[in-house]
Figure (cartoon, rainbow, N blue to C red):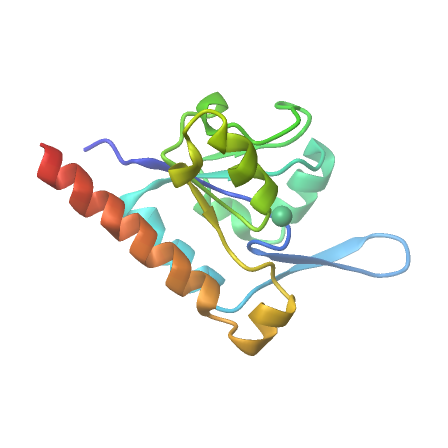
Length: 150
Ligand SMILES: [Mg+2]
């Protein structure tokens, strides 16, 4: 079975970097992150897409996230004014940046963007698992829709 491809943004979507005064020393995953990725990796081909540089991405991946993603993309491979999902051929992009969904409207692609509250924002602090509750139903409704069409 070919797994549907979905992409995640990195910073403020999955967590934030931990730094000391000079360098990155870790990556703090947000609540529910590992549980969600463990669940999704069974059904989906997971892609990680950041607009940060490759060296930054590789550094962050070394703290544990690399086990979940079959493909990773950074600004070094794909630069552009917005994250166009057609460039990496994914069904969905999960991202904290509303701007990408807005940009996608021009092409009628906005339903493929799942925007979640940024890690650490007011809304997230109030309900730390809300982002998971946004992602899961959107992905499962896609599943049901595609089954009906077959
Ligand atoms: Mg982000």
